[in-house]
Amino acid sequence: MTRKQKRLSVILGALAFLGVATGLTFYALGQRTSFFYMPEDLQTAAVPAGQRIRLGGLVESGTVLRGQGTDVAFSVTDGTDSVKVVYAGILPDLFREEQGVVTEGAFREDGTFVADSVLAKHDENYMPKEVAEGLKAKGVWQEEQ
Image 1 (cartoon, one colour):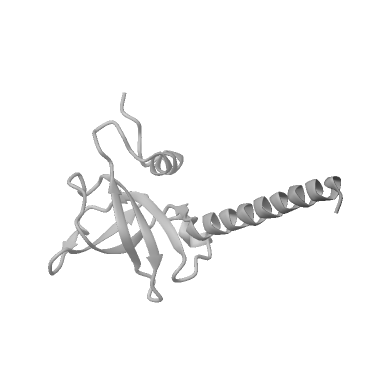
Image 2 (tube, one colour):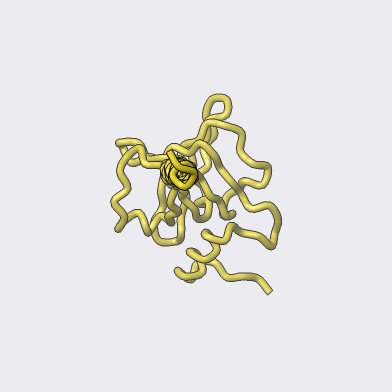
């Protein structure tokens, strides 16, 4: 092999390595992607059971039911539709009815959303961006001056 051929083989090997590394990175990121939906969006979206998504909106008034231990059931609404959510874990301190919430998880076959994490707003002036935009678009939530 000449010096030029050795250099070319090293460059081609490095490019092949970078290509495989890039492909694996995009594959891993694609597996972790979760899409954001409001309850009304779920009427038109075909979300299969078991697909991981984010569900956001307001905790519907009068729907928080605490079960045994850390089990909690509640509904998330956008003013038009609502989705029943079950969660087994410790809720954030600021979780309460009629407050903004983003849940992450998947639907069961019966249509119940099983959340594995619940995120609540952290002060009076903040609501998760996706939730605020979705509620503003529907005219349900007005930003306070």
